[in-house]
Image 1: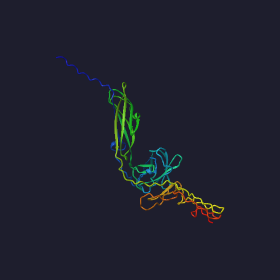
Image 2: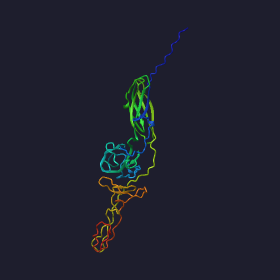
Image 3: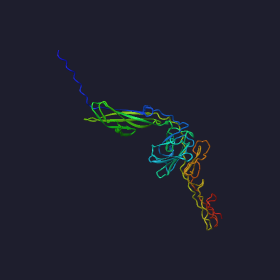
Image 4: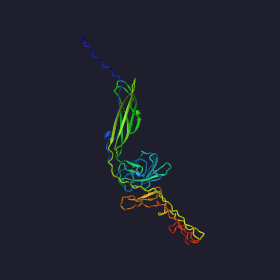
Length: 378
């Protein structure tokens, strides 16, 4: 019998191979980012700490259910492009915040001092001109919900309730070939943001069957419904031949807060009152002129209105005392409508002076009162 031929050995596969895998979990509970929980929306009645995001823009975007909310823009209000200085104080005028911020910056209240019942804030530009003034009441004073908007601030957290969850993405790169690989790129894309994060790779030189992680921290807003897709492409360079690549994708999902109906809050008016215009005519037959027209800055014929008071239901124009906001009585008609109010200013003076009737005695009535503007006494 002839000898049995030895089996033919399989050729060794020396082709380089690479693989990449994405995982994601929150930093506190290690829960998968596809199963993150949405917090309860309403803040506790004894909240100690509030954290807001500066979002820029004007009072018209405000969205909250606070009875005594006040907001007013000046010179067009803040933009969402420029840095702004935010100064805040408590109801006694004590400063509790003063920093220059950009859109997306976080503002915390109560983390260093006791949280006041009422926060009064002024947004200023780089010339220290006021662009916006608004108030926020703590839950000891009024309702407060996550994602409420007060002028250019949006509430992100109150104590343990937090919309912004810290998470960590882990990109694990595996050398599945029989030759060494140098990891030369790890391109990550997420929400239209692309970046080569190879600098996060723990070990860029991999022997066969070795793997290495890359950890990337991020923040996910669990109060907004979203599907956040992350894509990574890893590239490895063997000692000879062409580089090899591998791709993986991962989707983090959030349900978001349940939408609740919120009436549009009242914000104060912007108009300036004009001054009275008319001048009295010349007295017939006399040498002196008739009295001046009504040019005083009273409630009827003009004035200027820069800041505003606010009341319980309706809003009225007024002016500040120093740099503090003042609170008017408002109207108690329970109509839940924004009152227009007269305040000081808002109407343009239009009363014209009449012709002087005197014979030289009518020019002394120039006391700017409401009596006989422009008429002589003769």
